Image 1 (cartoon, helix red, strand yellow):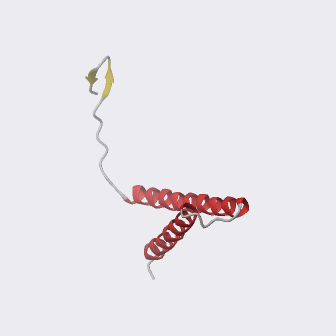
Image 2 (image 1 turned 60 degrees about the horizontal axis):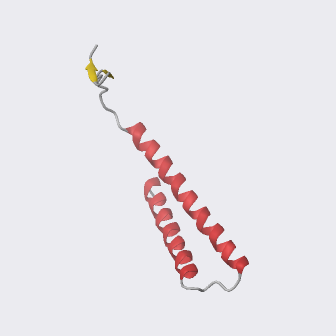
Length: 83
């Protein structure tokens, strides 16, 4: 199975679980402060992992992109200076 497909499925499963946790917290299905803190920790962990996955994928995409670098000069006192 393609690595990116696995990552996309994992991300979807994690987002679904995060939505379930959020819905349970918002609907009042939390019966103790300990359970609330536990669910809040879970939600935070899922968001952190999803962000890290996105950061890693963006870094990979930036490495894969190849393009030309164009020097457009630097600005000094609002005027463009070319080399």
